[in-house]
Length: 61
Image (cartoon, rainbow, N blue to C red; front, side, top):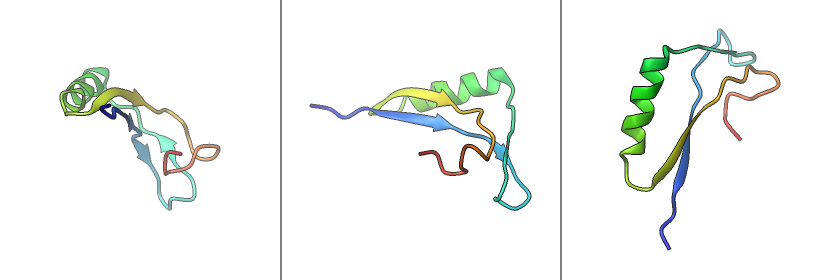
C-alpha cells in the first residue's frame, strides 16, 4: 500500500515567534505552489492554513 502525504502551507509573519500573524499570499502564487507540490510523488493534497498564533502554534500540529 502506498502512503500519501498531506502538505500544509502556513505563511506567517512574526517579530519574536511568541505571536504570529497569518501572511496572506496572492491566490495565483498559492495555486502555483500547490500545483508544484502536488506533482511530487506521494503527495495527495495541499492545504493553506490561515491560523494566527495564538491559538495556532508556529508548528502545525
